[in-house]
Length: 280
Image (cartoon, rainbow, N blue to C red; front, top):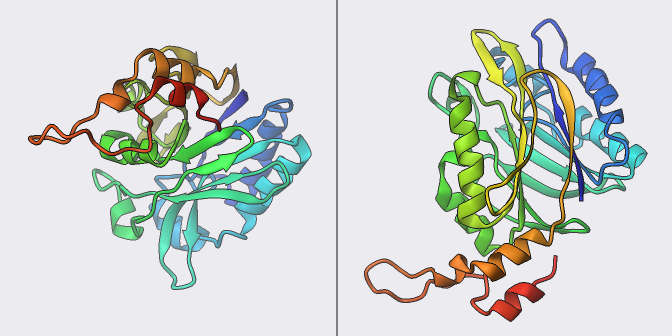
């Protein structure tokens, strides 16, 4: 699988419409990739809280429409990062969207753990309450968003739903960059997943975003890591690494319930042959 990570800034002097145009020019540089991924809330800028109400849009709004155009033009899956979704009841969500090469939506994820520390996200947005994994031509793909990295139980639930790759759009501050590196590596190793984590860059108000978008395999090997400015980072991955690691070191099959010692039920098979034969 050929991956292109579009590490993008959201300067306040730029409107969301202007940013979608500029993002499109960066996405064009991802030609040849199978999967293109953008950061969290890049269209409005994560820390532009006063603009959330005005910038919110339905799933058939301009951000997904732009993503559909990019997917069709590149013939690639496009994870548009996340956008401010307004539902039919007027509620706002931080929603990640994955598009197929034909532009159709194949996966959505509403951020479960909205952030409250030095942030108004928890005040303004509704937490998501569902978790699904999509079957795609690139395998079984799930998503979490930024702060969700700190909640391993959410990630284990993705494994139980059959995830093999997890995409993480983020707007992670530079001040906690080492936490970003730690958690993306830790989640890849403990859940034996391929983690594709794409962070925003640039200054948003008083906050500097950390960049260092990265791809981490289930052994914890960092296959690619970006710098701290805007760029399109490419990485090629053999998705079979998930099967190989889970078969060679089948830790997920050894899970047990606390106290009782009973083996924990999971969709991850406890038979090596089954693990090796698990398709995408």
